[in-house]
Length: 124
Image (cartoon, rainbow, N blue to C red):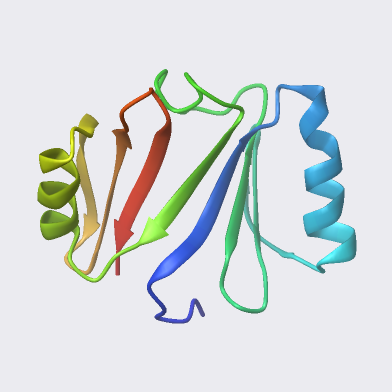
């Protein structure tokens, strides 16, 4: 079960890029990440502290904007997704796509920061 701690909690990698293979080995073999979910082209690992690592490879589905700036996207758990979104938009960040509500208690979105960096936000 994922612990309820706000802050840095998820890292997404464009695994179609071969330079990412070291990160996958780090997560799986060194940090002992537990494979949580696998679908074609997507591998997801969870560390004991609840940090999630997603590896999007060939055949996986992700929005075009996700890796538009970097092969790695960091996501942050926030206590109030709507409030965080509003505060970041006031600082010039732009919502990419839409806020996705997977359930009543879980939602996420991606934002483009000034300079083009993409980050994710999520709320449990």
